[in-house]
Image (tube, rainbow, N blue to C red; front, side, top):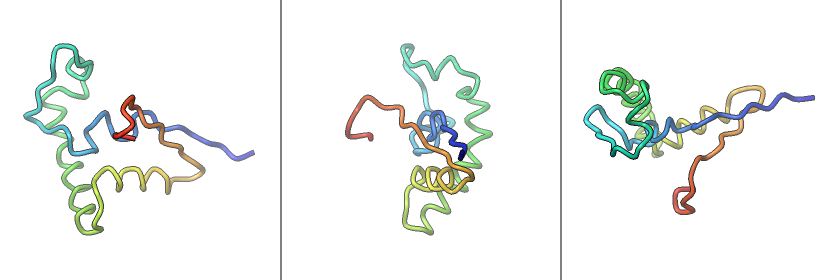
Length: 91
């Protein structure tokens, strides 16, 4: 039987969709504001990876999100990204 893994929040809750930078501020009702992953220090540190993915995306004529999802889908054995959205236009 082939193993299938699911990727939780494959776009990093917006980070890998170019929606978050070190200067992003979150509303009080936004859960990300309380997570260590989204502190200003963490966002600044992770920006180098996002910048690298964005550069690759530009060279490929794709978005950062498309490159991140393509990398996930290329991983063995099988990874299934689960989009976390309630808005059909985001899906």
